[in-house]
Length: 228
Image (cartoon, rainbow, N blue to C red; front, side, top):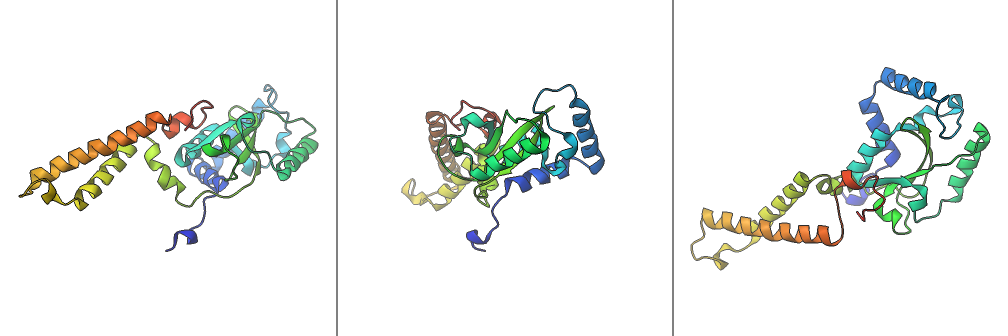
């Protein structure tokens, strides 16, 4: 199958899958009732709960899991380097008119690069509802690369990264001509060469990570300072 034939990843669909996997219909209804009951005492965005589209309500934990899986960030709108499209402003105005309120405290969920550069890779605009719930206001741009979750897997934790380094070390060791190092290569030669390759590749990865200020997905998904 050609890579360009694979469907691209829609972040909203990924969020919906996480929500459906975690909550049964009854549990979701209970969570929304808890949110509804808290509307009288909260101060974030005076939405009319009965007018909200429940399919656009997400909990912070669901946003966090998708952000970690796809190496996305969830930050205040002021850190976003791109301009909101006109369609996003229109959706905001429609919500403000419908709910007779002024919205604030917007958050953006997007790849790290969009908080440093002007790109358009599937940003999602959220407004806080309170109690760690967020309402999806607008989605625009391109969907994510179909293999992004797989490509970001090594950045999820140290064990995934070490596994990748070890796999690369095995491949490099397999293709290296052993007779360059000894006239009679044996099992001990192979393992020594594998260990050498592992140390060399791991050193390069560590140097790259420290030099560029990289960190693992759980540490950067809501970190406004890390360069990621």
